[in-house]
Length: 97
Image (cartoon, rainbow, N blue to C red; front, side, top):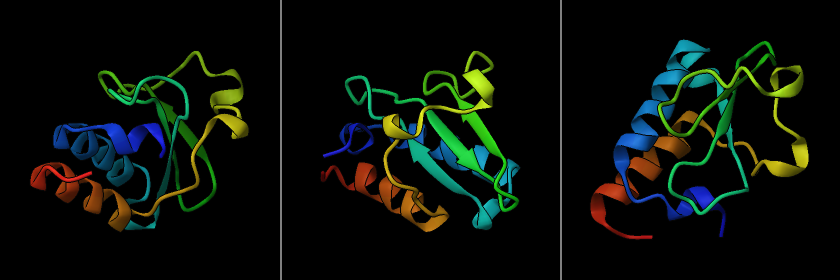
């Protein structure tokens, strides 16, 4: 199980989805961080051009401290689509894991 699958608050995924909208909308993908306890993992949005945009999980602002404006590949879960994130919102709202 990946840390983002432990997140229980739909608002976390709504805000992540908002960052996807700002960087390509339904054509963007997202990769959640593998470290931490699953409360609010950092994540990286990849826009349709392949540009990477790292974000803090808490507050959802740009993660400007990321070296080279990205997180290490081995510290990220596989890419998820816009629809995948919408499904995470539904999971949180239904209370299931």
